[in-house]
Image: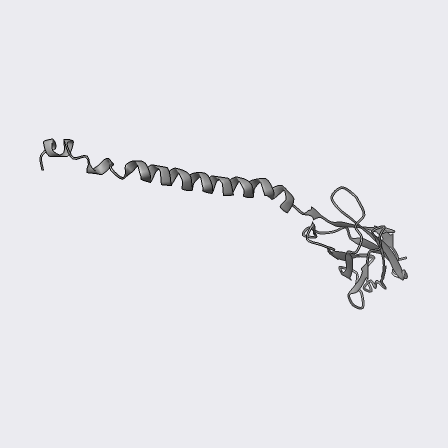
Length: 147
């Protein structure tokens, strides 16, 4: 084929305008979906929960600890389940309690320290009340000190 015959061939641009229009429409639709998804991501965020045991330091003879579950802003959270587990101080099992409307729960514990152990910790996990909250980070621990 010579260069001269290609110059007069107009078939290549017959379908070009409609293909550009289709590509433009599909591109705008995809962009719209992406922008809607991005703008909705603010509502997908969850608030991290933490616990505030009261008192923060106890002796092995304590029977109950009051724990307040709070969100990232320090606001109390109701209907969360608090789970107390052995840390370096031992519990006879896993203890649970549900928070009341003021965000507090009374957890029954009976911490034990080893023979040569002067102090230890009890750890807490929180099962959030809904999908708006999460407990991914380590929570405040309860310090147990031998009398």
